[in-house]
Image (cartoon, rainbow, N blue to C red; front, side, top):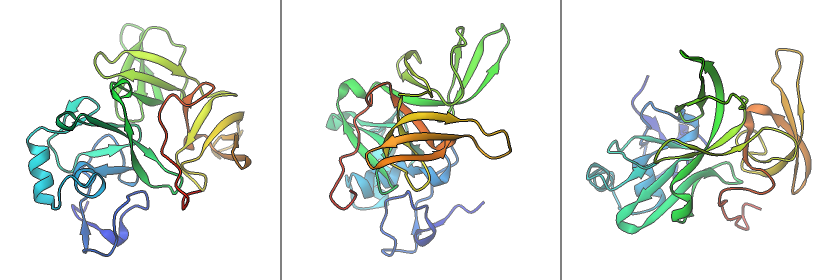
Length: 241
């Protein structure tokens, strides 16, 4: 696999200028796929604009000034993706990675009360030794639970300090969700119905958004709250409306 990424070929989700140079920083292999992640160096240099060059970004990161989900990360290419929390203790600032309504990954400023946890979608479940259930999450984490009340597609609110589950947002009717793919990417909508397809085709979800009802595949639906969003959302600019 190539270690380089041409700017013109970069994923549409990456909010970078396409014609300023030939190559862009490519995320390292990690918890998020290429098409839905941002290298930490791009976040520091291009999005937050804390420096002007890749060399300066590398110095900031290598010095241990940047935390991702509560842990110091020193890899300038570390992949940051959906729901990750980027913290800069020296500046007393934190941000959550989300999709905006243009389908771009964006950083949403959050306060201290939101910077200690994240939302994680359950992608799979496995039974481990001792009869406990292991939840396999969208960001590569694994969490052991004794109460097997969680289903694939549900979302948990996870504390960074102790890996404790603080809340549970099920994939069911009435839940508020963020759309993470397809033509409705970045939209916030309420789940109206889960449509199980008895075929190789993916299951669908019918949702009600601000412009009416629409359907998308279940894999694109990320619950973010019961009756209202549990997280701060990106501000909608006039050119995104």
